[in-house]
Image (cartoon, rainbow, N blue to C red):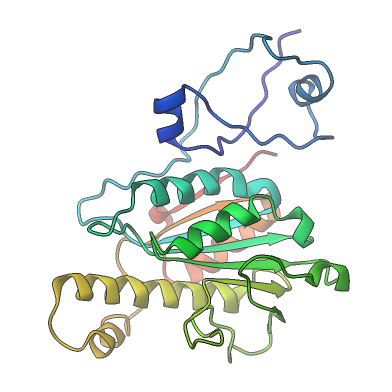
Length: 265
């Protein structure tokens, strides 16, 4: 029985070009005939028909160079955003480091953070400039076990903006941590600080590339009036999460044309 199924591509254009492969992350127990067939019936060698559709895609080719990226994911919504993040990593170089990127990724527990190790490895590489905040919504003690190079779990303080910036967490060396894990949901304070931090990092990077002047002072004055031009936001997750996050991003000053989202329900 021919039935269509819609899935996000989690691999990169480079992998497709080099191997002819695309990677789909399909959760066991999902709804739909194709999903059940893939998990319960399909075997290596079975033929399927693929059709690439939709407008949810990222291009680094823009007139003024790659602007900063805010990637917001809920659950398996990380799949297409991982493709964007990995592509930025594959195409970054010391001479052309690529855009500043912040990833806000919410799941119920650490175990549900798909691709966690890969995301952490990209953030640790330094190319491109990536900051990551994982947020855990179940609040259980079992979900606070740390692995890899992440910092301690902290609570998301929804009542105050103080110390909620992802730019403000420093490790023993004094360097800003690339990855944080927090309890709570992606909220207004987290999005506001993510956008503010992205703006400052992007401006500082541009000034550093061009040279001259006090980067810190100039960057601070450059972002005083709001969001840097060219910032783009990609959101993928459950519908309610997408709608709420998109509204908060618009509230912070991003234009509708620069906000892209993918729904699968």
